[in-house]
Image 1 (cartoon, rainbow, N blue to C red):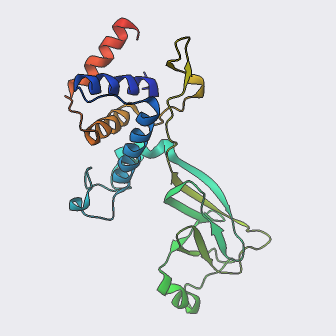
Image 2: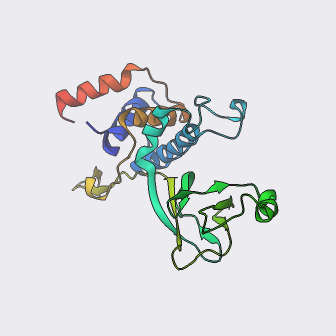
Image 3: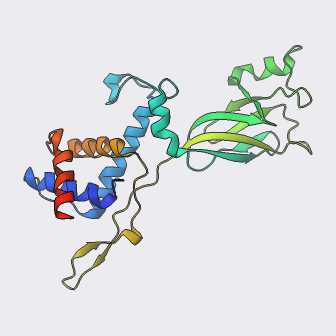
Length: 229
């Protein structure tokens, strides 16, 4: 069973009440959960900072572990980038580059201080004819060599990238007593696998100062199956 935003919200409410920590609205739950999923994704990708700078996950970065790639596969997507005067903008939801190709050939990443050397190279000169492409990465765009791109035949680059997870939303309507009632039609569900959803929820609860045991999720799931609620 895929864990819905309603399931995760009701589980969180149960533990919050159990800990006598007050309550949290569906909207507030979304804010806290989305913050936790962002830090979870950062830990999977691998932080630039060391653990003592706030990293809570394992010291394993992207591409070092097939399990991590599988967890992130739902957010990994291909797209074509339009190249104008050697420059192509990154997608608005871009997080991490997995691969970048032109004409089906891998582009080689170079540092900013290598641009002049690559252009002056006799052996590895950037060339459309020889399918030798290079790129330099900036905050929101790529700069390609040779800068004569695009040509009639080549106007795009193919980017495989990891995108930002969509923010979950606990949608609701009002009942006759003006109480908020869950509405799946206006909700946005999490896209993570179930184990990741549990981990993100645990992180959120930890941030809220709510204590829990490893068996809490399992026991809650059993109660839902029995009661249907």
